[in-house]
Image 1 (spheres, one colour):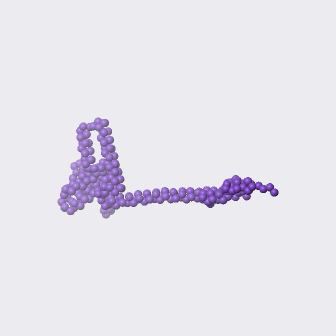
Image 2 (tube, rainbow, N blue to C red):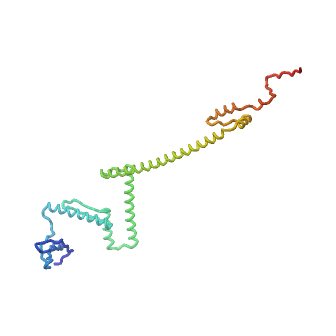
Length: 276
């Protein structure tokens, strides 16, 4: 009988004083276990387990669950590690469906059918390129659709399709985003406050400088003050409003004609000159 499959060496075990190794060889329906004597180099058949339907319902269900989970795990690892497109469909004895696909089962089956038809009639290079670009376009459209759905969820739209866990994750993402926005806003606000405080100090310095200049200009000598009064000029007084400055100018203004000796006012008769 020709046996197919790989040989599996089990860990060494001690049987008395002999060291034995077990070998497992599988054919289509039977698993054979061989014992290898390391000292005498002899092989003896230890037993065999026939691959057949498990009669016990409970044992069969337990075995199905274990083997199914292992198969689904292997399919997931293959799709992630090797970037392969994998689709797995399992029906239990009760007719329950179990499936896994990294893209979609329907899309993978359609691709399988097309590959089988292409095997009979190989496509040209142009058709192969067209198929590749169609697949890439489909992938990009799916990514765009996912991004659009995510954006709608962020603004609070189309939430009916989300379960509790997805809503919880969305809430956490929104809270993190709000915290980042508030942090950036506070940072800009503090920078603006610091700039305004610096600008205020500069304006205060300029104001003090102007006050000092005004005080220095107001300290005129008496001759300059008299000259300014005679010429009808007003001395600027710091701290006065425009109205007060006008009144101050009127008080200090002396008309020039009052200083002339011969004054003539209308409504007054000049006394006649008398010779004595």
